Each structure stands twice: as C-alpha cells, then as structure tokens.
Image 1 (cartoon, rainbow, N blue to C red):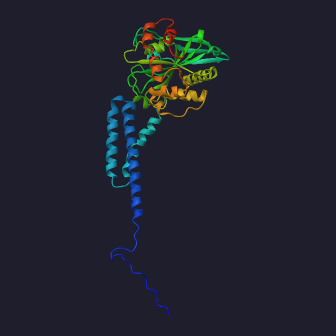
Image 2 (cartoon, one colour):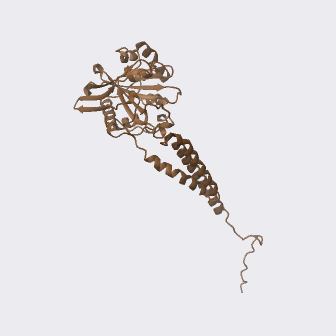
Image 3 (tube, rainbow, N blue to C red):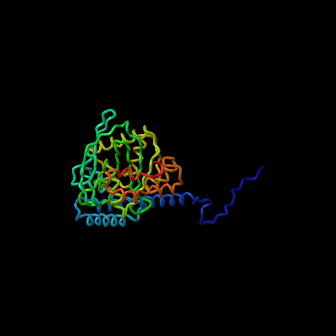
Length: 358
C-alpha cells in the first residue's frame, strides 16, 4: 500500500506568499515614469515654442510679452494642479500650447508688404524654347552697403549659351554658418547670380530666431554679381568673408538646375511662401533644386551647419581636386580681388582670375 503524498513545505515566511513576481510591476512603473518624462519634455518644448511664437509673431507688438508671459503663467499653474497624475503636467502644457500652434498655422505669407528697397520686386522668367527672358533682374547701383539705388531690368539669355555653374559661401561671423549662392555663367551673354533670401520689410533686420517663426517671406534674388556679390565683398568686407568655387557639373545638369530655379521664382510670384531659418533657406533649397535637376542628395548635418558644405562638395568631387581643401579654400577667398575690382564692368571676370578650377 503506497503512502499518501505529502505536499512540500514552503520555506517562505507566514507573512509572505510563496511566490511573488515583483519584476512586472517594477517594469510597468519604470515604463510609465519614462513615458511621463518624455511626455513632459515634449510638452515643455511645445510651451517654449509657443512662448517664442507669441514674443516674435504676435500681431500686436506691445502685447507680445504680456500675452507670452500670461501663457507661461497659465501653463505653470495648470501643470502644478495636475502634478499628481502621471501624464497630468504634460497634458496641461500641451493643452496650453495647442491654441498658439493653431493660430500660428493661420499666418499667411504675402507679396504686398512694404519691403526694403532692394527686395521690393520678385523676379520671374519667360521661357520660349532656347530663349529665356528674366524680368525684375536686379542690378542696384551700390555706393556702400546701405547707400544704393535699386534698379530692375529685363535681360535675355540663351540656354544653349549656359556654360558653367559657380558656388558662393559668404561667412559673416561663425565658421559654421554662411549664406550660399549660385551663379549661372552664360559666357558672353553674362551671368545670373541667384541668391535665396529672407525677404525683409522696410523696418526689419535679419534674425535666425525670427526666421524660424514666419517673420520673413521667401525671396529668390536673380541679378548681377556687381550687385549681389559686391554687396558682400567688398562693401560688407568688415564682416563678410566670401569664397567662390567652380562646381564640376555637366551642361545638362547646369541647365536643369537653372530651369528649376526659374520655376521656383515664377511660383513665388503668385504663391508667396515662408522663409524658415532651418528648413527653407539658402542651402536646404539648393539641395531641393539639385534633387529635382540631377540626383537625390541625402540629408546631411552640413545643411544646417552649412559653413562646412565645402567639405561635402569636395568629398563628392564637385570642387577642384588639384589642391587639398584647405589650400583650395584659402585661394578661393575673393575679398581682396573684389575690393580691387570695385564697380568695374569686368568685376565678375576679375574676381575669378587665377582661382583654382576656373
């Protein structure tokens, strides 16, 4: 006769269950805390963005700071009142920021503001086969950086005459940030310098922070280098360092790029758009034009820190390879030549003389 089975004796204390799984509750608490922290950071960033949007873009200037500070106070009080709930503070902050975001989306760009004199007109082009007529081609008579007489012309170019593509990098302070421009060389017919800029009203100066909050419309300037380049060097030589590079591009790619620029200029004439310091600027839009005209260019951190774009172009083989990049860049500085050329009719030829790749 077999003996009855006896259940095993548990070694656990009488006050504790035999098996307690503490891992799952701890993991859940950790995940909830982590998600709550992430939500808090996102919501705090949203309120900071809303605060800056009100300070920079609120239509009644005298109320900008009071309204922004009022938003911050309401958001803080709401977050404190919901502090005991895991996602309460984040919900409160996002609720306060949401109305500002939806108001900001209603801001619309215009072409009929009171612009600075040299930004008054938008260029546009008529294309008939090989013939291109650019209207509102800018050729200001500049006596100094601030003393000038705006001039607008219509100029005719033949696509079959387009020969070369040149690239400018204009530094005004930091070595990490610059303004970039393209020039399309039509040989004996002349050159078209294309500068993508923040279009400023008569009483505005440029601010990268303001440029991130719909303060400037987008402007394509198409004009003469004796205007656009000379404004930077030598007229602003005290602050601007200007470098000029020849881009190794085929005539087909150069032509496609030029036509894509004209298409954007024509579109802005009837459909104004916002400039944005980080997403819609002189360098990110060049990348878009290259994508449309040639081949896809992957995103690169140097599109934001665009003072280093020459490194990317050199590595891709678009710049002259006969010299190491530091020497190439040193020999590409045009400030002394631009100063010597002044307002000479052969300004564009003189700033290119002796440059590597030209």
